[in-house]
Amino acid sequence: MKKFLLAVGLLSIAGTALAAGKPCEELKSEIAAKIDAKGASGYSLEVVDKGAAADGDVVGSCEGGTKEIVYKRG
Image 1: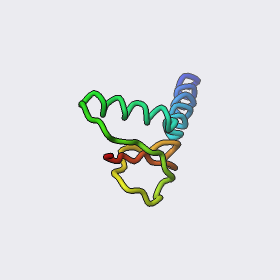
Image 2: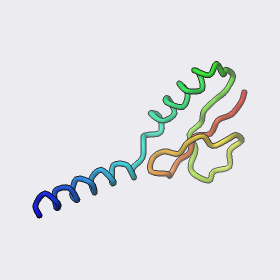
Image 3: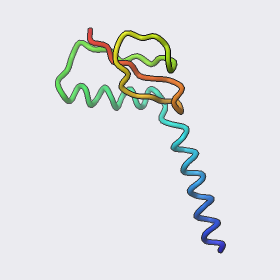
Image 4: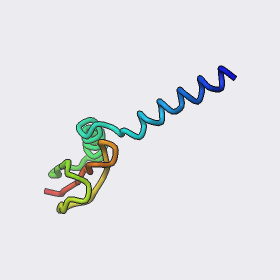
């Protein structure tokens, strides 16, 4: 029974960490690396509040879903 409670406790902590999401700058760097690896140039990535009007395509969300990363061709 103690092992079960320990497992439940650890899983709840892990779930909270995943729900928090990645920091925006970290995710933005990962997305930029993937885009660069495909040979793209002349683009920008911008972090905006979720639902904010932005010209471009949403390519990720961060900060627990409160912000989005927008891709724009330049």
